[in-house]
Length: 559
Image (cartoon, rainbow, N blue to C red; front, side, top):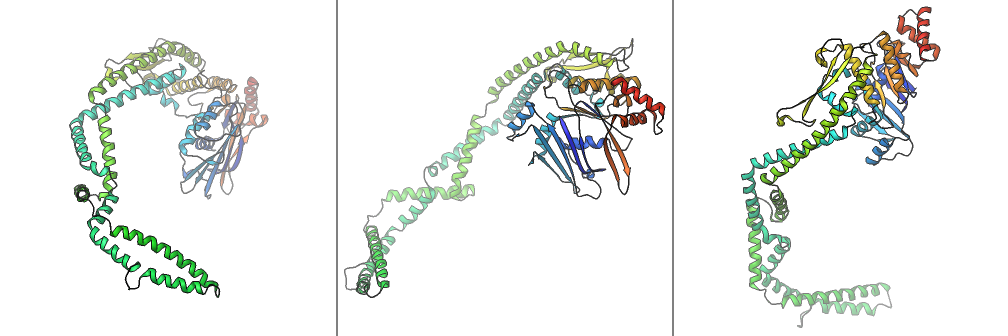
């Protein structure tokens, strides 16, 4: 339930906070006063796209806040869990900010939220029916979706549509595989050949192989250098070496330890150097005296290095990158080898088709069973709306060619209608007038909103220009219909008819003021002020005692 709507620098409204009541809320006002601003603001809070023109002239930003009570609304709670968001309080605060530069931001309970998330949550909080809803009646898809909602088979319809899409996906996959079967085989052979070629390099670390090959190729020179280094460090000749000179330095420092602490520290470091040189001497001695490597090992390394160079030139890649490329080849090969053949897919396609037919038949049976009762409900609601002879019927026509079946099923479904005695029923777009379509759209929306398939915590219903094409006694019936609906569900509707407005639980008036800058004001009417507004709606600008008495009579009928 919407608790409040707060607007800052939004279009003609400088600043206003509007409390929205339970039940049926109605919005009225003169043409051009800004009645649709509330609906525009609410639409933005539930994910509709923004327009910089909605920012009040002279302002940099517009802010809209919508506060909802979601206590005991398990559907909204589940949404928060699914989107990994916390719902600490049983309230939801949505903020939408528009900038004059055209940018838009949104927050949910103080945390940034994407437009896609806001739209999915908004669908659970608010259900907006535009003034052009009657045009939707002329689309077969709308009629089928409405029938499914009323028959409580939306879930089954979604399963059937998903099954059909799966069947189509398999067909497309089979067509693609068949068209590239020859190329697939050639590609598999090429990848297998490339992987076999590079296989020896996959079993080693190529960088280590290069380093070992470089060393073994120069081993004799390296052994000679090791011997020369060893001679300089420690030798048995009369020529001075590092170890002899270091020993002399250590002896000198040790003699002066008692005189200066510095010599003691220096001696420690020299002893450490002596130990490290001894270890280095042992390493160089082992290296200089080693046996020459096995020629077969050097030959094996030569082969690996040559293979790396050849493949590097062939694939125009450094040898070190070939290993990573080979992993890509392996993935491609596995994908191609695991790709089902057209023969295997043929069986899967047939199974998917049978699954779809089973769901489509079940769906159609349920639609046909529910259709008569739904038509009876529709007729019962239409007749009081100045359509006493209204008749309607759902007609199911099976498509002759199975290739023309689609996600909605195997049948074309039409809603036939007649408003006059003795006239045959025909599709709505052929015979219904604008007024008849508007009444039909309203009744269908109300019936869907009150269907048992809807959740216990129902979204707020919003009707834009609810009275299109109606007047007089029909308007009163519409008002009574909306008031009755308001007993179980929150509604917000714009109307021009006093008979509709009189039925509201809360009456909101939109007035325009022309000071230094035009501004719209939202007023929740007191009972006495409501009489004046209903009188204006009934009799025009000049409000008289007669129009006031008429307004009081409208309210008396309600109360």
